[in-house]
Image (cartoon, rainbow, N blue to C red):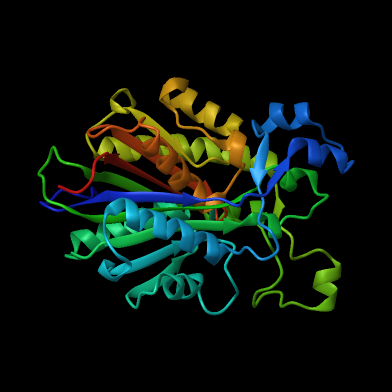
Length: 339
C-alpha cells in the first residue's frame, strides 16, 4: 500500500547519531595476520575504518546518546515522546528488550519496543512509525537504529571482522498535514525470504541451540555469513524493492535527489545504484568511515547528510535496507520537518 495517501504523513522532525571514539582500522586488521591487507579490504568493501565500542560501551548506551541528539534536534523534550522504537540485532541482553534500557536512559515511560529485522531494521521501523502516524498518533515517535556488532564477529574471521562496526542513529518522527506536496513518507515496500535465513546468522544462544560450553567452544555464538550469496541477493532485492516503492509513489529513479542505502558494502551500493541508474553523486555513502553498522547505517547517513546541508527541504529521498532474514524494506520520502 502507499503510505501518506491521506492528510497525515509521517515526517522526520529531528535527527542525531552517536559513534564510539574507538576505531578499528585496516592497518590493525592487517597486523592480525588473517590473510588480509588494507588494499584487499578497500577493493572488496570500500571500508577504511570502523568504529568499535570500548568494553563499557553498549548498544543501549549508543541508542540513548543518539536519541537525545535527535530529541534536541527536533526541539522537544523526552517527555513529549509518545513511542520509542529501537531497531537492533545486537540487543543489550536477551530479556528484556533493548528499548526498555533506552527508555530508562531517556527518562520516558511511553510505549517502547524493539524491531528485529537486522540491517533492514531502521527502514522496517520507519514503516511502523508511518503506520502509527496514519492511525492517529499525534505525539512524536523516536526511532533509533543501534548496534554493537564488533562484539559478535570473531576477531580472526576475515569474512566478517573486516565489515562490521558499532554506532547508532536516530530520528524523531511526527505527523505532517501540509498536503500532497508536503514533507513525509510517500510510499514504502517491505519483504522477507526465510529460505535465505542461513546466509547471515548466529546459530547459538536461542531456543533452537541454547548456550552450552560446547556451543561456546564451537564458536557458534559468532556471526556467520555467506558473503558471495549475500552480495547477489542484496543487489537484486535493493533494485526490486526500490523500484516498487518508487512506483507506489508515482515516481521513478530520475526523481530521486538522494539514494540512502544500507551501508553494507561499497560494491553492493555501487552495483545497486548502477542498476537503478542513480549516479554516484546522488548516493549518500559513508561506509568508508563506519563500516557496516546494520540498523544504524541509514539513520547515521541521514543525520550526517542533514547536518552538512546535503539534504534540503523538498528533496526526494530513497532509503533501502536489507539484511539477515533475509529482510528488506524501502521508503520514499520528501525531506522536511513536519508542517
